[in-house]
Image 1 (cartoon, rainbow, N blue to C red):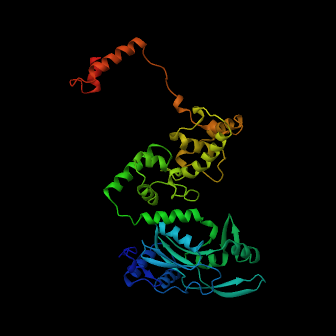
Image 2 (image 1 turned 90 degrees about the vertical axis):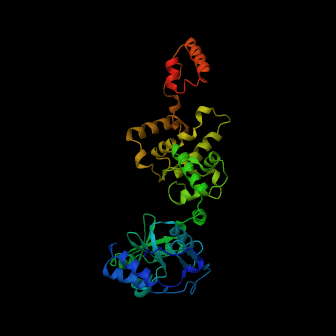
Image 3 (image 1 turned 120 degrees about the vertical axis):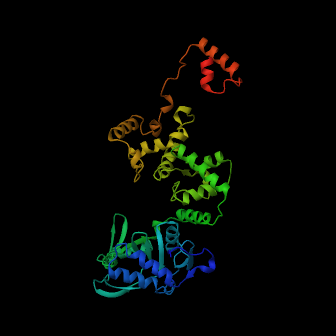
Length: 401
């Protein structure tokens, strides 16, 4: 039996209960191959065969309690923070590599150092234990203010490194079990992303039809024909206002959008691409381009990027280090020589990003390759023979000419 072989009906969800014997056997077979120590395997199986260690809200302070269903896994999990744990579970519910989630797993013994410098034994209950396809991880979700206070007052237990919070004592303990421990701040998942995740989760419940299948195929062809395109333009070409097919492709990671900064509930100005790195780049670059264009009363057509060139434009823009913390895809990353050339062009244009717009439409021969008299003869032959049933192919028409 597979761990995710459960019905999606609400009455079959497992709320605050441990796994059935069949699913326990499936979990035991799964964790035998993901590098846990014997103690780690015993801990995971103990968590899976026991109810949550505590009921959330016992010591809550101004927190919103909620039950979060994960239909794909057939469980309802506890959350005691609408802006932290709830958003975190929405993120996990979308991931396809998650095979099991347990809330409030069993407590473990830790020795911490208080802000007074006194070592004290405690029992620590993390928020979630998650079994992935190839690993097991423990997560603690906390408010930013609390994490910052702990890093300042309990430096032997807490640390901020490379923008991420680390509970050193817990990481050391779970590391001996072969389990990684992560601390997630509430600010790591924005409200915009959470709203998008809720919308993507809703399209999984839509019954698939031949019409939706056809729309998905056509949408893929439209997006892949260009580097990046707005969802509104795709819907216009599909001649539909229903974005369900596009949302399904995004949920399946076939197409990609910037989930952190764009609302899918307002899809017409959301950039979508088959390359996961481009939508966020385009969002930032297009904003800068709009600012540059608004500074002028009139702009010639040659200074406006054609939609099919926006992907190349954003990659050039990122290669000049103007899009901070963003990188183009490895397949399209520019050479050092090209980066130097783009930077020089920007300097000469006083930072105007329009100077990076590709001019590929100007390539090639733009003049007629034959004389006007020759053209007139050719047009007369076309008019005379285009309706001739004996000239059904271009080759036959060419030979007649």
